[in-house]
Image: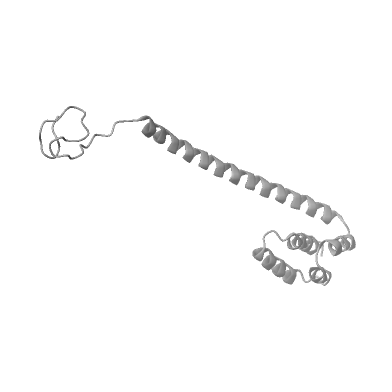
Length: 140
């Protein structure tokens, strides 16, 4: 074997040239660590992707459940007399929204509630208010 710097003959497998004291470059050989890394990266990528897929699927199931509950609530409320719906709304939504529902100002109530939901998508009062508004609007 020859030194890559001074071209002198050196012992096979030497890591340093005894003549010029330069380190000899070795070709990379597959090692256990390299093999593990080659396997580990795709496995980790798949694990992360599966986790994201599972999270998204659960979120969609939650949204579907919430939508179905909303449909059922609306169906129950639509079967009730208007006065009973208003009485129910009185206990479920804040006074300002209830006042708008009583006045049948549904367009303005919906605008206010949608603005509140845009600020805070988890605003339960606003969600309930929209349900009552839609039910009462249909029953006009």
